Length: 141
Image (cartoon, rainbow, N blue to C red; front, top):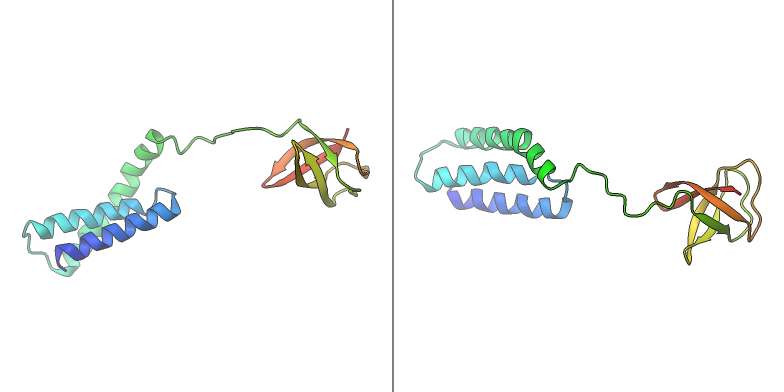
């Protein structure tokens, strides 16, 4: 393949990386750029050798450069912006034990699961004991 095809492949892989934001696919673009540079410099390589260099360079970059990039960009740290656990919510309606309902907290209505043994009544204060996605796990207080 000619060098510009490898550049297009690399740019396509980088575009995919931007949509995924997981820092996985971009390192395969490194392999494509390496092959593009080699072919662009006039190194005569059969297709199988180009694919082998692409694969080897990509795997090397993924296994050895990705952990460094993840550490430098601090992508391995779990960011906790705000913890809702321990806050008080108000049941918007009756919520039976282990059932889903609605609760208001901080001026917003949330989905809430009653994890306590007693049913919650409308207007009852309840404590947030866990947050799973956008569902508050609440218990009567």
